[in-house]
Length: 466
Image (cartoon, rainbow, N blue to C red; front, side, top):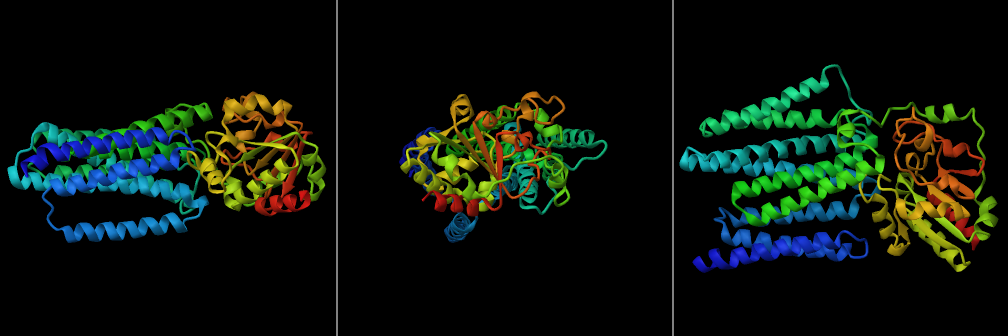
């Protein structure tokens, strides 16, 4: 038993950590991402087995039952949840991770207190941080889920003195943690107070953030869930949990920074500016735009333009996810390539409602990874491209970001689709995107609107080209 605890368990944790790092490295490229996911999963399996062998488990029956029930729910969600709802699922999973940290840290607190009474300052600090960060992650993720699902309004919820209240809540929860550390945690009311204030703070933290910033919020909350897990690892003295939580926390912060740069905004502006997701009455955006002339074609009217093109760049957006048009788009790609037309995909960092949303959709349709290009790679090619096909994207292709200083998206790096010879925009209506502003692209001389369901429109175009 001593050999197991001193040699085999540490080696198993070290192996799992190596697999986590290797898996994370492979996740950096779409082609190796599936293998990276499997590698990290194997690492987590090794860590779980090592923990169950090492720790004094009260009841293996409960552990096995939890694995079966949780695995069944996870498998069902993975298979049944639509791709349009994937951001909501990611948000809720982030929340579950934070909630688990709160429960584990709280349970460990009461277990330790019942045994020794007085806890070291370091142990109490890690317990407090685990509960605070986990609680904020839990309720913040629930709010993000509710906004994305339409249960709550997507617009920022703002009121006078909101930032002052949030500051007081943060100061209050940190004060409670300091008191708990100084008191040696003999008084459990401090812990209950920390849990309550942390949960309220998580709610207040996310409600002022608009729908346009949800991709950033999801990646930030993902980072929080990792940091909470790492803090819980210190509480449990579990090296595998510390390492895996640190990796998730660090990667989430890096991803958040990439998303902010994709919008040319700072994280503080995202969290405190209350931008995006303005509520619009049905048809309001379309009515405002109706006074301006736009060119609208039927799919069969566009065939000649596509056939005479040497290169077509497809720009996917959330509208493609809603219409589930990714398979039809891949079919269009194959038909065009059979006619000698080169097809590329331009993927903006904040396209969709979560990081990598468009990449996942296109991978699901078996679009070749080498055909996907990021903003910096593809922008120089638009001027020499005959056709840009925009499918459901809006704010990320709005030329106002380059010149209109009064626009809320001014300065945001965009895809330069307006510089292509012809731009086809597939949309259901003229309604604006997350930012709630009119898109100048729709009224350009070289822009042609194709109104209707994106999947149906692309399918008609494929039929005509065949």
